Length: 634
Image 1: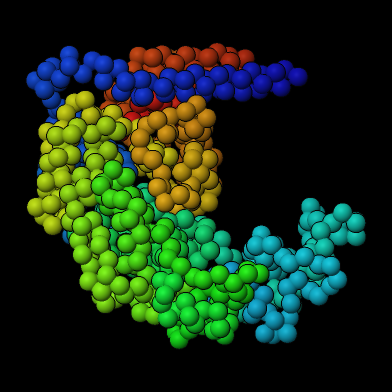
Image 2 (image 1 turned 120 degrees about the vertical axis):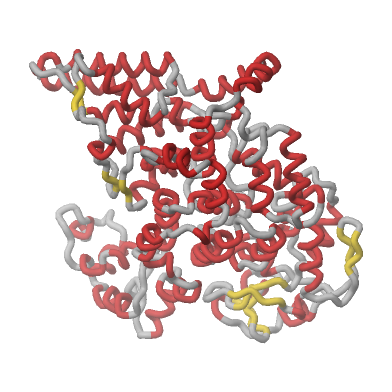
């Protein structure tokens, strides 16, 4: 009973502590609001003082990487701030063998679209393949429902257990009337499981898990840190949702082959690559967009059906409206991509375009479609779907008969438009400088964008080398996203992680499931979206779980940090906290946070006085610091 009461008191204190520290996390947001009110008073003082060389190194590492590793600030000071930056904007000059070796172990991440579609097919393809062997899944039976994706994934993951139920396996209870009918079928279906294994099929969900694991792995281990940060930025800018149909297969190559290689290149090249990407074409439905007067529309209702009820016209497979709906209706132009390429990808919502421009751009992109959209999808231009009439976009006349060049002209117009230069510069400055970037900086970045023909590397360098970036009011003024927070915590203490589902689960619980943003806007990049009590409590819980070695697939060895004390008692508590604050926060901690941490430690030591040797593991201190308001800032 005594031990039980002590345990309950300990849990209560831990929860109280977490809530207390989380409540102080409003300080990053309130700090920014207070700073705005005191801006005029502090500007002259800040301009005179400026950042120290150490602070400049910390600031660059905070913004250009996924977090500082032990000793990295000293390394940048030794190398030189500018040399480090120049190296990072040329990732091809940096060896990245360690990260690349880890990525080679993530099987599906290294496969092509065709291989992913072959080995990780959707449930309907699995059913069709089994039928070709004279088998059915589930086994034939009256009034049996089709298997769900979850059921098929279970069968693929555990084929050897289908007829070997464990102690808690519901198959043991299959005679009970309440049991789902598929249980009995799966037990009788070992032959099906063996057939699936022989065909080399794997769980479709594994593609998503592997891509999330690859993103985390690269963020933690890559030496090309700025390239990884920029890949995260541009994917979010040109967002697609991995759970939408064929994008489950197409998103891996989209990030790996379309986004990542172009993060420092010409914006026009990146825009064109995303426009032709199967993932983007499928996500925004442009692959189905056809002029109502095109030859495709005439063939649509009488073409023979291919797989999945799609009409086969030449090399294409297009959705057959008559097969899918009780009433026939003419195919038409889809405006989704036309609207998003202007509002989200280039000009911005206030970029000066009209609804008529949206309609004209949509006409220009008719015929930009896919061959085999659900199996080794490839971009092709289909003249029979295209509107070949004359168009006018943002005052530019696009002559009739241009074919694929119509869309290419639109890309060129948009990529070189002054509104695009301003919109892209604003988003980059918001990401790397401040939630409310100075207009003077945005204007100079936009000028660089226009003068350099949209050279992203030049725009980035202009931003990092600007006085606004180095301004003291922007130092540690942004709040980390969940991905940035979790990865920076791993890097800060030199931890190891495989980036697997257990790690990603924490990021998702904080609100940023990787590749899981459904709207084309992606995730926001401002503090007000990430600062709320629930999400911040998750951050504290993650920090304590990480430092305490309670996250599967992650491992922490605090002895590698060079701090000898592994346990904390009343005699050395303050000294140990000082050491970790210096290591993890460069000594920058508010009096309020420090008092909260000290009180927590003292309370825990007091609770352990009954044991005769009051002491706590230093991992607890590390967790509290990683979950503190100061560690959430960058």
